[in-house]
Length: 386
Image (spheres, rainbow, N blue to C red):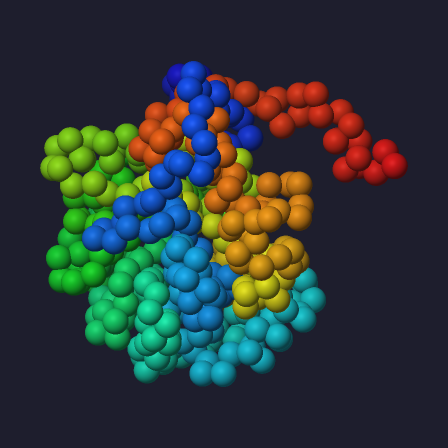
């Protein structure tokens, strides 16, 4: 549905996680008996969870821990782990910076050149633990870094930027040919980020294995405020999932849709998959783990940008181990722990035996879903109840 916003201008209504709810099914299923596996290229992840390629979330040690629990952590090849061999002091410095100086400090620390030897070393560190290795780079460095990562043993290569399109125009630098890149790489390639049907379809036709969906919804991302761009995640995911279905019927190739950002609780993750995602990429929830390198902080991938930072350092604290965040037991009641349990329970309640069935769940527009009947919860948060 479109509405007029001015003379000869229309705008389409779009929806975010807080504006929808999932309708319980006619049949319910034991949560322990639902299948939550996620296809990704030629591999299958036991759980549909990816950790964001953010330096405060994923280092080699976190990637190993995530892999052993069945998920996939993406290491940023343009972060501090490929600029500094010994990075613990750098992480400590970032975590202790004042809010006013944090972005300036990050910009300064990321000036040091990237070491190609460290790219190979980090990949080999992760692979030595016998877990899948996924790494990320921006389009301008994709061909060079992709080759190094592949030769070092990486299993998945992610090409990621604020907004990614097949048709990028630039005179100042060589534009990457995604179709050529996907064909040349011997490992699956994930492209992102996008939010529209047409762009998703264009990207799928390059031969990629997966798409990241989301522009600006992450808690540490400021793109929406700085640039004014973005589409709420429910609408963005549903539109890109529609492109996936069309492409699958047309070619027989299934391209996984990964909702990237904006999910702060188990409920948001359930809604993302019900909107059409095959899996989710999460940052802040994993930044809270004891295994995360950020010491209770995390910062957006575009925070170090020299001229126009589109990310910020935020404090999320440390609330539990990675295993507790993923599998419980939950010690908090806000939906930020036991994310796998939340997904399984939600699927059981709507009667979805697997992720594909979860994508067909009935959705209703429900802007009061978090506040209806919650008077005392709201009062407690405001400190009005004892």
